Structures are given as C-alpha cells and as structure tokens.
Image (tube, rainbow, N blue to C red; front, side, top):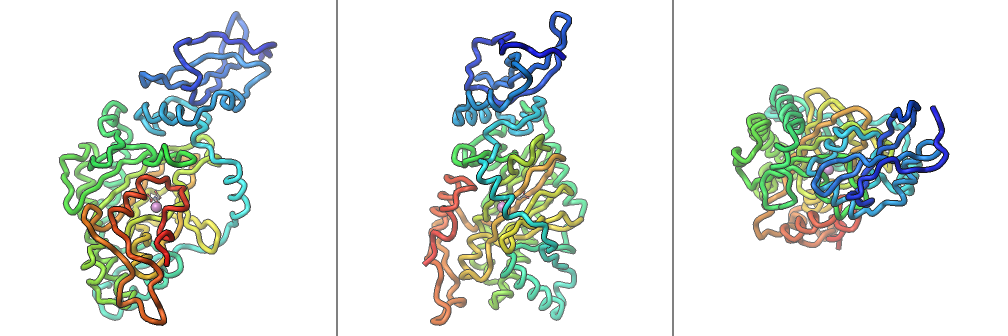
Length: 424
Ligand code: OGA
Ligand code: NI
C-alpha cells in the first residue's frame, strides 16, 4: 500500500453537484502498477441513478470529513426520496457506511447509553386458548387488564390465526421488497389518498433523523380492494387481513371486559374500523449503533396487532428502560394505542416503543392499526361509564380527522403531537 502525499481528484464528474453526495465506499484499485486505497463517494444524480464520484484521499480514509463539508440535509433527503428505491436501494448499491441523514444526533446516542440496562423482564405472553369457556375467559381478561395497565403491550399465542397464514404474510412482504426496483417504484408515493403505497419514512421531511426502514402502507375503511395490492403479496395479504380483522374484534371485546364494560362496548364505538396496515422491511444495517429502524413513538390509533419475523429489534419502554419484545414463534404482539388510552381515561397505557437497527436482516414486521373511522366526522373522549366525581375525565374530546391529520404531518420523533395535547 502506498500513501498518497496530497489529496488529489483522480477523476471528476462535473455534472454532479456536491449536494448529491450520499455516502462512501472504500476500494482497492491499481493505478500505474501501484495499489491505492480509494474512497468512492456514492452520489445520487437527479436522473435517479447512483453514480460513483471518484476521489483519492490523502493519508487514508476520512469519509466523515468529506461528508461534513458537503452536508446539506434537505438536498440529501430529496435525493434519497427521488431514488424511490428506499433503504434497500442504498444497501443494494453496496454501501458500507450509512448516509448522514440516518445518523442520530450524538446527544440521543449518549442518552441511550445512560438508560440502557439489561433487565430481565419480558412483555406478558397471554394464551388465548379456551376463550369461550367462562372461567378461562375471566383469567384471560384479568391478564389482559394487568398487561394493558402496566405495559400497554402483550403477546398473544393460540389466537386462532394458523402459522401458515402468518408465514405467508411475511413471505409476501419479503417477495414484494425483493422485486425489481422498477416494479416497486410504481407504488412509491407520498400521496395519502393512495390505498396502497410503498414509501421509505412517511415522515422523511419532518423528522430529525431518517429511519432505516422501508414500508408498504395499505389502508381501507372496511373492505380491502385486493386488486390494488401488488401481485407478489396479494393472496397472502388478503388472507392475513381477513384473520386479523376477527382477532381485532375479539381483543377489543376482552379489553372492554377488562374495563368492566359489556363485551361489545368498544366495537360498538367503531374502534375496530379504519384499517391501516404498515408492512415494514428493515434491511441489515452496516452501522446499526448509529441509527434506528423506528424512532421512539406511541401508536395513534386504538389498537395495534404486530406480526414480526424471527429477527428481533422491537423494544418497549418499561420503568424507564428499553426491553426487547422478542419474537415468539406463532405469537403476535398487541399494543394499546393513544386513542384507547384516551377513551379508557388513562387506565390503559399507550406505551412508547421503537425498533433498533440490526446488523442482520432483513427484519420484517406487519403492524395492523385499528384507527377508528378516520374518514368520518367523529369525536372521541373518555367513556362516560369510566368517569365519576372521584375519577373525573382526564382528557377532552377530540375530532378524529383532525387528530390523525396532525399525526401524518408531524414526525414520529415529535414529542408534542401525541395524546398529552388533549389532557385536561
Ligand atoms: C409501528 C411499529 C414496530 C415494528 O409500525 O408503529 O411500532 O416492530 N412497528 O415494526
Ligand atoms: Ni408503533
């Protein structure tokens, strides 16, 4: 290996502006019979192609310095978005360092060091078998109550959805993401009126740091129009959705009973309407300690049912510490959303959670949100039966459309948008 005395540009592509710089790759090349260590910045050109911009660097590699000089966040976000290939597109281009738009601020990283302890507690796992037997149901309702009041999270097993349907859904999402990028681009869109959209970071331009994640979003009021789904995952998705809709209603019955209400109360309030399904794909990350798969947040709707493949990453905040929600074979994660916290007058908690990035992958998860009738003019507030003189309402009523609109406009990392805004 020879050292290069001065920084010298070996080859320039004059039509590339420095603002299109995304990341770097290190290569060994031979030049005039000598071996050089070469840093190749990866640039995203406005015609959406990833091009190498070749520089020789003095005295070895200093990728971060090169990045600092040329960092214009908004331009990089736009360049990344215009590739319409998501995070997987970056990985497929062979990058070995993550672009700066994904790097968390150093104060966030330091804060994690302070709060991280390896505590040995686990999110409760609730066995739903025997749910129609009166005594057994009482036990299950009690477990659901405790988990919803303390964790806001639990896992369910023996929930009635066959393992083949769960595996099929994961498989469909894998196939969709592995499709040719030109095929996937047909779905890439930030237009919220589109029922099926592929997007990397719905809050890309609002959040402080981009997440290491691509998502296919599916939304429908009651019935999915299967023709809109990509063929690569159509049948499996329709089958999975049909099952989860039933499970959602069952869980809302158990949750209503856990609040001391009649089983139909939450379903009659239309909590199981408004279906939004986020099918996430978290590629393996070359520098997982610098970024996140999903920023700390709580879910806006009533209830979330989450399917994950066997790669961990989901964490929930419990007693001020991050606890891994490890995948349970055949299990599904259930969590309380902000709207259920509101209507339960704060009895059930919509807990903060996040997804860490992984050096292995891809991690696949499917978050099924029961968001309520979001396209209707509907208000929600604490359930009358749950408030009294001794236990007054803790929240004011909200208009569902306005509340969801605010969520879509802000970033996951915006601490100010959530349900606390409606606190009395
Ligand atoms: C979400 C979410 C977790 C995961 O989509 O809101 O928290 O494991 N997902 O993907
Ligand atoms: Ni979430």
